[in-house]
Image (cartoon, rainbow, N blue to C red; front, side, top):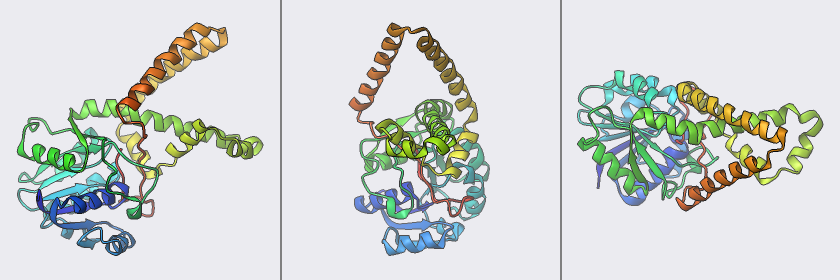
Length: 312
């Protein structure tokens, strides 16, 4: 048993999936659900996902050896302020947010000196939301990235969190928060921004073509609509929190898109073929690495300020 008591704050897809896996693997003696929604807490109790469920977040962490924050990144400061005085000495705090630099800045000022913070990001998810959407093998074969604070890379807390995620089925990688945010800006945040834009463009054309778009949607457009189904609160927070990296990769994307426009306009078939051949090879590499299922962040939008969230 890795921990005596674990508290998960936020029982969306990621939080509830973690709860199922923790129980399945016997990773703690007692599991506590903290969520601002009484409805979510009632659902967690009904599904027997935790030993206790409560809306009092400070009380939920008082006996926890490990606290996992699974809410949208924009709520981290508020969560930190609520739970800081309830944390016990020696506790480890971790999270599942898909942006690391900004959440470290938001949370660390509230954390006591006698607790450890190990930021984490499981790259897994679906378009489903809420405590009923979770499943225990969500993290199997997917990466979880740890971004330890400066000087903490080899600390006991980092080693414990690494073993925890491995027990949940993840492959673990360690990198700096800044590098993480740039990498995810390319692999996750930019694709979501493009998906929102493409679906938004289709919506703008709906008076003339919406029925045809829905009726004749090819696989590519269906994939975009699934990605664009992410929780608006969570994705708003991600784009604003990671705006430096996102704006940088967006500029690169715009430059590449301009080159493709020129190639199409000039009928440069060889350039287009080589470009598509190169990108096709990337797709094959993704499949070979068994990362072919694109993760999506979804939350419960009934409480946008402290919504139960998922991580990607």
